[in-house]
Length: 475
Image 1 (cartoon, rainbow, N blue to C red):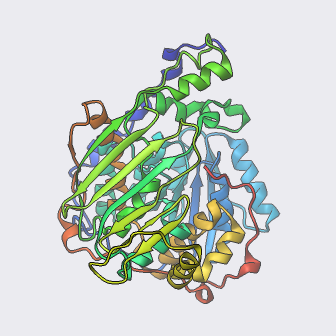
Image 2 (image 1 turned 120 degrees about the vertical axis):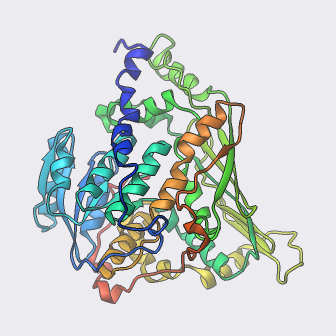
Image 3 (image 1 turned 90 degrees about the vertical axis):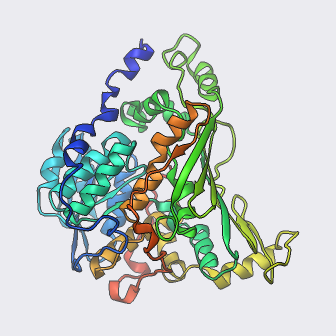
């Protein structure tokens, strides 16, 4: 294919497509007070009717997981391409599930959001996340959005203000908050094992060059949308996997908040090198020259004096890592590989890592109750080792029982604000950027996330109810 960089980027006006919609909502009267979504709950929904929009790489796995949860019905399916809708409709039929309503085309999501649903589950390319979620909430539906849920500050504020005004949940589907080690870390923190947590480190380090450059016809990102975003932006375009679990541990938006950040990025070298080797120096891929640096590093300071480092690298030849480091006055835990050590008493030192036997003892004693109760079920179902399923299970359990969600729209906005703020900083020699207080002061009185689980007996679900789903992609 003969394509120039300009041809490739043509049509990227969609990157700011939600601006007009966001602006029109900015000053609307609110049904929920500013900052009031943290402990927000709605009346129990006995049967959660879900519409899934986006049935490409991640959407089918969501359909399969949601369909396995008692009291949840996948009532609607939507994608740009009708054949993808048909494929998932056939899957539902094969599993003996009720047929879903079908929607397709560029604006099929609108008719779906206007139909009889409780939850719209958004699994589309990034540029459509906020746009669809806003439309869903405007039409009375709760929204659950894949990561990142918003790509700029305007979208962040639009989602916050619309959730408050409509009284609808707006949750970012951050599956890493439900990882076994991440939830272990949260439980250790809540039990005081770290002492006072002062520092955290998270990352998304995952060599995605093959997927970014793969022909979409072979099952990769439709229209090269992810490569286009890497070509147009720098800073940290995918911050939430490593960040949100640390936010929960540090009680960000629930007793503390982000104050400011600074970001620096390396030059971009790895993608160019990959494209030249794979496609030739005269190919459009080699002439593309993505903007995003190979490695970006962000440091965030909180109002209460804590720090968080967040990294992004989808280009370098290195193994996958989210780092998952939490450090406090009495101990530290770091993942990839997992290691930890804790001082016995305040003021004691800790100068060597625990042995494997000591690590196993800690894991057994402090494993998060959700993993104790439903971990075997989740691992059987699949999806990033089971954390995808636990995320969906908790989301639906909370809706069914009228409980606040584990992650709210303020968590969404604070974490996604890095997409714009990191780019601003990286393009200005690491200049400090203030992070907005999306809670408008609500963080001062909001209670930290507790150690929450599910009642499988109440759900009526067992190991026999789920089947291993090999189709779920770990990307």
